[in-house]
Image (tube, rainbow, N blue to C red; front, side, top):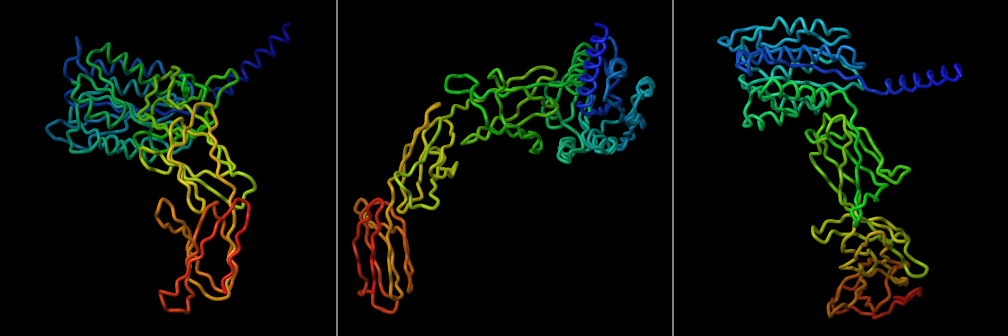
Length: 453
């Protein structure tokens, strides 16, 4: 029994170590506002006192969190506000292991003085993160004011995200009114904190989102509202930058439920589900440390394209068209079956002549079959050079089916059954009235021979 317990303990340790090893390293850079306005009141204290107290507690609590490194950048603390020093920002404590006490000591000694320079501080923050792959770089900006140095924090933040330097920053606004929310949402995920209690709760949420695993499932709903649709690729992109983050093939697990995936809650996601036509859901925000469910209506059926009898087509295709937009949403081969979202489509079949189906209905879990007649063949043998075309009269209108420019050769054209005309003129005869017409009929599976001498 003791031997079994040792083996079991070893297995648990092995699982824990491997799970730990799979977690990516996270680096969090605190960018703290130490401008003069941080002396404004927040409850019984002022903002800087509250910020120092709560940030110190948070740094202390993170001291033994694995695969996490912290750093501290401060702005507005070296020059007086009257100097309007728009480069007053400094990396006070760089990233390293076991630097928690250095960060706490630096926070303790901070004295707010100067102006608010968010854009330049974010720009400089790009150089604070050691160059490494497979690391989540996160900025948590704590501020009580907007940009005062004519910089553009939104543009700087977006550039850092596009370059892959950092993930979407977190912004904690201290004592700011709701009007400031729109000015900071473009910088990153914004949180308001009017009281110390708000600040404490927001800081805990932000840290949770920064370091905790977050699970999600994508429910692709059928016509009955059940998440049964599956086996389709999903592309997750960063809503801020358009950068592709993941491609996952949707899967139902062994219990028949949408499989669970793990996503970084730092991002706001745009999701494209590659059904035909595709589905798009934008600006998806995930709750960190929780299981998130994202649902999309994706009822699907099948469209089966068939040729009656033995085909003479080497490669026949059809254009499937969205009736609302007129866009071609797919090019499907004949003798093939594909899934489509439930609905009505228009179809252009690339036969000669072209066949148009105005209403092709796709129904949940059903197969709609579209079949065309077996074609025939037109064989033209020439003994000279000719200008000619194959035409048909359809609804009283003469329509061109195919132009032919033949010399001394044999030409075989695959045509759908029907009545046609061959209208031609010998190239060497320069008289319009020499034009001739030969009517002919094409039957399924048969060849029509025309010999021009």
